[in-house]
Length: 298
Image (cartoon, rainbow, N blue to C red):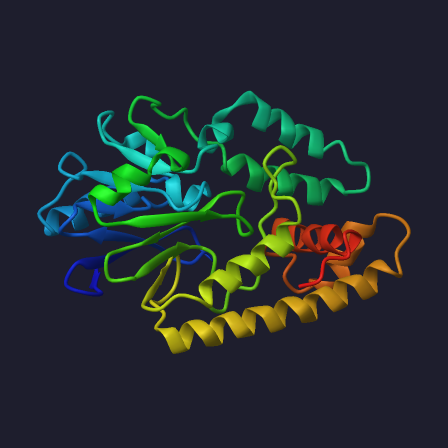
């Protein structure tokens, strides 16, 4: 547990091996929790223990805000008390629907992907399936303005890293940005199935970076260290440069390919990373293909 300001405490929750810790944040005065971490009993017990050290519990919290749907940030949903109010993405319940599950299977029909790639993609997308949410106490972002104002908070919804990224700002202009910017993390545009995938995802992610350029105080990301303004600007600049270098490499490889394009490009550009994940390189290549097809100017 790290005290960031008089009112903000950061709690780090562990994921599995090779995955970064997840940051959740407590606003002490408002009794608000931002994100809840990955699904595991160990994570649940640690979060309860850390809240207790602050004199809080799930039952005494006023509100939970979810920055986006990825399971490392919403995994403990099913363990929350039924009466606890939650603000989150409008379409969070899509990830517990049969439509989502069928969309995964539809993607796997693609004959241009090997079994090895399909299995990894299916595994990753399947981990995003969440339990059905209690609609009685769940407030979609589009209906949350008045509730957030009660706690001196404002929020905007963007897309790019995921289909719905919620950025929360407190009364001192500190910004909770989820996974939009994470220094030293290479992959930013995470693949979504067709029904919810942002149109021009890579273009949308560049717009998220532009939004970060306008922030004026601390940035509190979903992983890694807190960013002061100088560190934020450096991280954004590094991200843009890295993305453009990657785009050039991917487009160069695409121009060589006629069959099995996406997988072959993944193998050419991200060969050393493939033992860890095939899904993340797949996400990156697909986002570049879509942006290149539309001739988007970043």
